[in-house]
Amino acid sequence: MHETLRALAAGEISVAEAESRLAGYATGENGRFDAARESRNGVPEAVFAEGKPPDAVAELVALAVETTGRGLATRVDPRSAEAVTDRLAREFPEATVEYDEIARVLTARAADASLPSLDAVVGVVTAGTVDAGPAGEAAAVVAAMGARVERYDDVGVAGIHRLVDELDGLREADVLVVAAGREGALPTVVAGLVDVPVIGLPVASGYGHGGDGEAALAGLLQSCTVLSVVNIDAGFVAGAQAALVARTLDAARRE
Image (cartoon, rainbow, N blue to C red):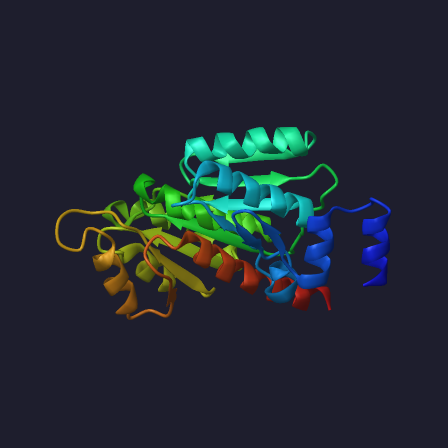
């Protein structure tokens, strides 16, 4: 505590950074940023941008960069991405900002911030291009937590030979996140062909009854192969769970 207070008095750290060190969070006009989450449970705090005004998203991401050196925001629309970019350009001109419009994920990093690095590979698999959004969200979280991401896209069961062509790579991964809409068949099939953990990510795509992701979710919950399942379009949860598995493997490999 004394070191933090001395650093604040000397102008070496900001009020927000001092608060985050002492309380574990930083308070802004639009809420509190949980700066201690990653050290507490291994998963970085992310700003859920959907439903928030662009200025609120920008403030929270700026708090993240100020207190942890890195920022992650999900469900970000272009207006919010622009607001974040503009604010960080003013407050942290050397920070880098990347925005994936398909995944709707924004990442930011201060110039002196280091990234974690895990000796583990997470495969992120999609049945079709419509699954790219939630799968991209999962991949961004995995990368933010330090594991290497390998993508296997458009390998759905409607043309199962595409999946067969990628089996060698899938079997070399440490954990797989498999995204599929419609009837959600791909994660079940993949789980029957590999001996690594599979996390099924149901996607809200399809026609008519069950086409909002409910058919995919129900199918995965009833899978006769061994896998775990997250909620519809819950890319963040799937990616975080996969990266936690990767962290455990990395720790074992370092022993």
